[in-house]
Length: 584
Image 1 (cartoon, one colour):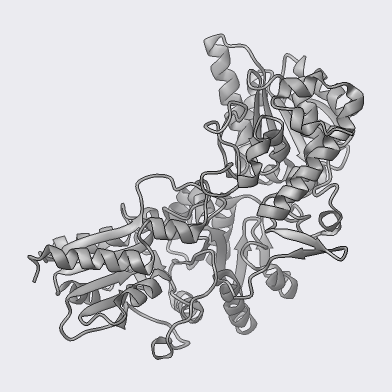
Image 2: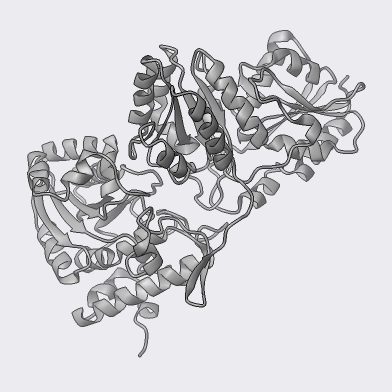
């Protein structure tokens, strides 16, 4: 029998299919998603769970005239397959290929770009109001997961929408999961009769709950929603990972984000690296200090798996808190914990920490409470792309008074810096990248106790050029300087407070290359230039880091090479400085 999916290039062809063909279409979509993620990896579970929902949406609504806004888009692979991108889906999450989430530059059927949760309702209301003011036709639909209801921004949008009485359609894709199982009162409420009263109390017409895998019931509910003249919620109950037995059986994440995999002898085999990651090293160091200090507690906004905290949660269930997709709450919750004398560690990705900037300043740094921010995924993150790059944490947080900001080079540094943070009376931050741990030469291993100031990785009596580095790129600088007499490498370790004496010593040779995996605007390089200007020191300085643009998805190792952040790029930058002449 000829497959349906290769013939479909637009949602109009979905609407034209006989109703009897729709189950086969859904089956083919699942086959394609499972095959695709097996080859290139991706957000498997959420996309499998939303197949019937997306087919029904395209049967009822007319994209792109009707705007479909997905929160956050990781569940929308079926949407991509039905909107003319099937032939290119093999390039998903790869450089120059299909985006990991939704992108209007990629297709007019992607109404809005987003990579962070809980944004859809607010954005959809804005689009609907904008269309109304301009007299433009079309419906607007916000597709949100129940995980998004653990985030405060969703409630701000729902509150505003209920008061406007505009006919916004909110489709609640309720699979009881965020990345892992949901937390809090709202997800539990959704599975009771009180769900209707909850949404009706906010000013919405409530339709459901509907079986999210019953195309007939879904289509009926969505048509009723499309005809509404007031806000409406369609509550669809779905199963994350549906159609893929290993994901269905995985109670932890239901195959949320998987790397490439294949079937061998009837078993699922996933590609896994053997080296430890920075996340795992930090979790191991935390386990040691939690065993000896009952004041240490951990808070994470729905990132137990990503931050390697699952084992820690099992060992210390009363001291490890998953607060849901609620970064602002996570930070202020930590402030409250610290105010009682505890030592909270807020484990959070760099890209998500951006969402809690006010809380960092107002609730943690202003009162000076001792919260440690363990900032994971700092720097380039690879396939998740522009929305997830850890670009701005140093530049945005460096100016805040009283916040100690540091970065380890290796796993041994993680242990020492954790001890440093817990010895401080005020707030601190440790940033570390996504990736495996480099090996530090034995002579450079730090002690187990607190560390202070910068560290020389390579020193010369007659220096010709100095690298000043932050984080694991210190190893690239060490490789670049290997065998080069007069080439020095200073691991800054701390951006704030900056080790001024060490930086001035490094700059005394007159040629400095500052290397960081973050934006050069406001980062370590800016700190070095500010110090040299304040002290009247003249030196040629080259800044290497993330460019003044949003870095797209791709292989992070390749991107480091393209940005000149590998050892060859660092060597070239130093050689260019030396060839310029004129410096002391």
